[in-house]
Image: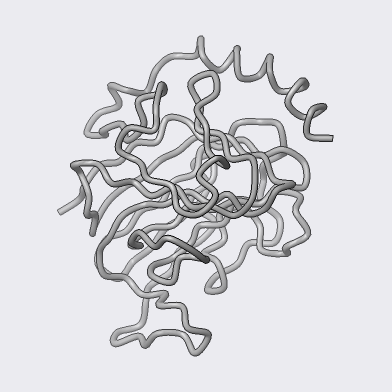
Length: 210
């Protein structure tokens, strides 16, 4: 089935390459050069990540791709990425996290990437904290995910529409589940969730905020 997905979106990827670049978007710096994994480091199952037609593609067993470039760490910031899911796929964008070799990242928050996967927490959910059930986006179509963090305030937007507006309680404690979903500072990580999930990312850019 993945071969069918790849064939159907090849044209979409090609068309995306001729769209105007956002490289000069005021105040934002690109985190991905569109050609290589320079500045990024994958955890377990490194082959789950590749660069395809100017995009970062996840396709394979669980792995997380951490940004380790010169701009890290990040505390207050405005992050944007263009994302395209394929049917039944699951991924994520972590922030305020740190590299770990195996497992689901323990530190930081996850912005969910999921339009039609069975997990009820859908795209732009602040995973397990403030969940979105019906995002206004579709598989096989590019959408823009924004993550804005300032102080204890987190805003998640899809195509400019606010989906999550969350203020972390003062002195919030780590979850009993073992995950440390708290703001501090850290880096970004993209998620390859499972072997049946194929997701594309491009135009990853960030602006640090005071």
